[in-house]
Structures are given as C-alpha cells and as structure tokens.
Image (cartoon, rainbow, N blue to C red; front, side, top):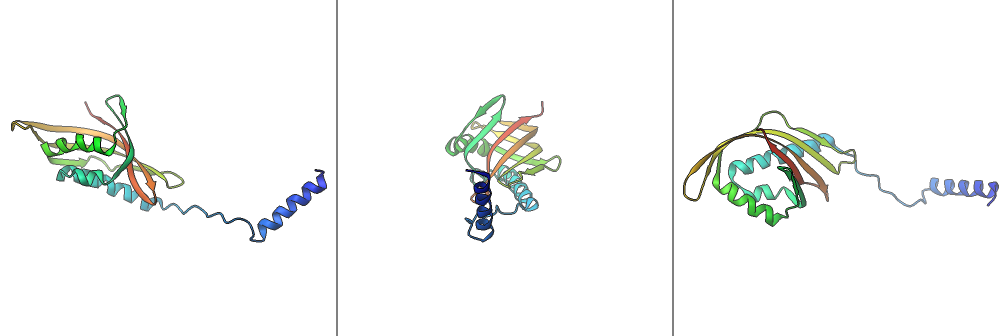
Length: 166
C-alpha cells in the first residue's frame, strides 16, 4: 500500500467514525467516590455491629467468594461454609462490651470504581464463655485491611489482612 492509499484509508476511517456509524462503545459509569467510600464505611460498621449482635448471617451477607485472608503469617482461601464454621462458635461464645474504631477508617476507591479498601484500627473488650461456663476476658486492639470488589453494581468484601497489637 502506497502513501496515497494509506492516507485515503485513514481519511475514510475518520469519516466513518465521525459519521456516527462507528460501533457504540458505552462509556464507563462515572465513579462517585464519596458515595462508594460511604458505602464501604457502612459495610465496615455493619461488620462491627454483627460482632456486637453475634450475627454470623449479617457478617456473611457482606462477603462473597472467592475470599482471601492473610493472618498470622498465613494466606488462606476459605469459602463461605468454612468461614461460617469458624465464625459461629466464635460469635456464639463471645459477648462484646466494646467493639469500636479507635480512629476514623481510611477508605480508598480505585480510579475505575471497581475495587476498594478500608484500613481500620479497633478496640475490643468483652468475654468469651467456654462450653463449661469458664469465662475468658477479651481485650485487644486490632487493625486490618478489608478488601472490596464491586460486582454487578454491589460492593462485597472479598478478603482481609488482619493483626493484633502485641
């Protein structure tokens, strides 16, 4: 193809694209960072409330598989059934008198609005009651990162990285 044919091809493409005959490409939806950040903060508060209420169902409703977690030097991929099996005995035995943020969580949303994260630092107090009735105090400061994905327009927690202050 010579330069004249190449120029004619480029001109034809410009005319075609400019005529409205070009394939329709939907623009990505605008990202409303303030609304998305508020949603992630609400979800974080719902996780805290689920602990205070002892509600595994409320906690699990915020999450979706696949779910990845990093804790105590180990990365794990627990599905919903595995997470529920761990959380039910934990929440059934625990009674929290305090489970609150020590500082406002840090929240960020990706440029395309599909990913988000939240960093929290909380103080927790309460008691854990064993099946024999023995009580063990719960007192800790913990920090974690919650990982979020927006799926079909809805935010879901898809993982976390957590630790406790020594």
